[in-house]
Image (tube, rainbow, N blue to C red; front, top):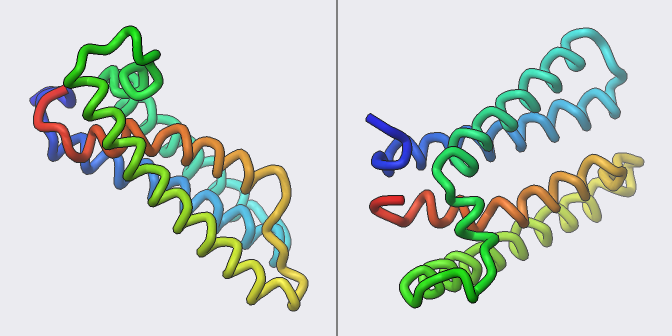
Length: 143
């Protein structure tokens, strides 16, 4: 069964992608707070590699990344409608996620555990750009 024709595989890969990203961030900041050791270093690279590999499979190989980032002039009316809907859901999800992380940082920040270095904004940028194609992967019957 091909990824393009299987919504279940796309959904699984979207979950793997975002879980890998979450575990990457969790492991990275655990290493920052507790001190780096070999286990943290290996785990960070494993989760980052899993996030990159799942991104390639679910976003690039299916063409969803290209569809979600295409100019409006290049799309037909149906594609414009589904990408608009995907963007609408994506920005709602992104906003809630960012506010939750900022709230968490505000609550735990007084203990000296601030999460704002270069890694978190890069992950936010990736999250914002991959969400529309993830919504398409999750909702569309066929790609």
